Structures are given as structure tokens and as C-alpha cells.
Image (cartoon, rainbow, N blue to C red; front, side, top):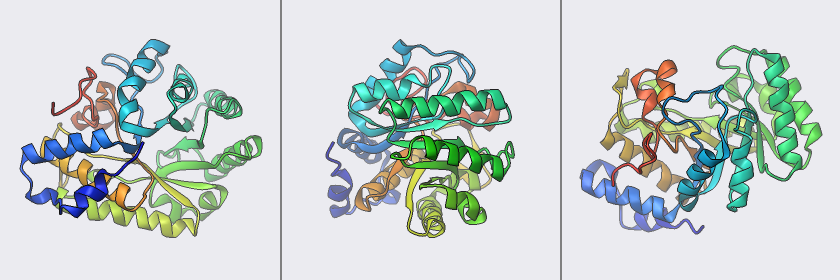
Length: 295
């Protein structure tokens, strides 16, 4: 997929702060038509949640919807149907960042790690993520996580292996950074209470902090986004205009500077309100019924 929208828009002087909603919506669709680097895959329909077993038909339908608009897809787990995401994505010629979800359940951790290794050995993994914010959630020690990272690296030495967490963890925890082949950083100005007018610059600052901590290693933004509804968090406010501005600024920068970035998320998921409040259900580019927003 040739991603040229950012460069062409930059040449015409796109400034989201001065654009009308109609102009923002048009640019949003132009970017999607041209294609993004990567999208985080939203697995669950309304009424579903993590722990439910998800079938192939549902995953295939959603992969078919996002395929024209992205080169890469990121999945978060290797069990309960999640293992089908990279398998189906590869059928459609997509690249995959595949995660093993780790937590306090050691039996599930074992299933996740073995599942990730199996998928990688089948040629279905381009980047492997061992854990997602498990240190942030305080569900595992650094030593335990590093042991899992080394185990996966030993099992799949030809594939870059990393760990996903908030951007600042990689400067705060150099032993984890050292263990990773690739730094996988989540960057959310919204969750740090940043006003939309300053959010794009702050997101860039987050990325460069992770880049500095990486000391020459590859850095991928594994999640960034802005909710389209649901209220706010300190100085941050959800809403359609803010969603559009953030998406456009982030995608143009990713394209212009060749930043590997996975946008969060592909589809709205209602189950996330339990963890995040009302905004949790509104991070998708498509709504919970799989309709593209801003038609």
C-alpha cells in the first residue's frame, strides 16, 4: 500500500485547528483511502468481552473491513480465538504484531507464551509482543517479565521481540528495555489529561522519550488514539472534532516521518467501559456495529 496522503496534505498546509468539521471529515476519509501504517484489532462485538471464545467468521469479517486501510494489524492475545487474527490477516497479505497477554494467572500465561511461539514458528508473526502493560498494572515483577521475554527470544531468534507498556516505563526500567529487541510504546495524551490543542505535540514528546530510552533500538508506537464520545479526563475531552483532529495529525506525522504507529482502535468495544468509564466504548474508527464513522 503506497502511503502518500501525509506528504500531499502537508504540501497543501493542512492545519487541523483551522479546519471545519466538514473539512476534517473529508481529510479523515482521504487518509483512510490512502492507508495507515497499522491498526489495533478490536475483537469483541457488543455483549462480548475478554474470556469469551470468538470464532473465525467474526474475525474474518472485521479483517476484511480494515484490510483496505492498513498494512499492519496488532493483536493482543494468543488464546480464545485471538490466535486466529494473525492467521487470517496473513491470508490477506497483512503484516502482524502479535501479543501474548500476561497477568497474574500463570496457567494462562503459559498458554499465551506457547501460543505466541507456535504462531511465530508457523510464519504468522512479524513482531512479537510479550505482555501488554503488565508492569503498569503491577501484575508481574520485572524479573518474571524479563524471563518470559528471554524465553520467547530464544524460541524465535529470527523475529524481533519486545514488550508493550506506557512510553515512560522504558526510561524508568532499563533492564526491561535492555531485554527487548524492539521498544513497543503506548502514547496516550488523552489519559494524561492533555488538552486537544497540545495533544499532538505531547504525543511526539512521548515518542521521543521512548526513542531516547531505546538507545538505537527500533521504536514502535503500539497504541495511540482519542475517543469520539464519552466525556473527558482532567483537561482531555472526548468528541468527534477532537477525534478527527488527533487522528489526522497523528497519521500525517506517521507518514511524513516514517513513524511505525498502530492506531487505537479499529472498532468501538462496549466492554471497555468497565475499565475506562464511558470513553472506553468510543475509541474505534468503526462503531460497534462495524459502520465506518463520519460517513
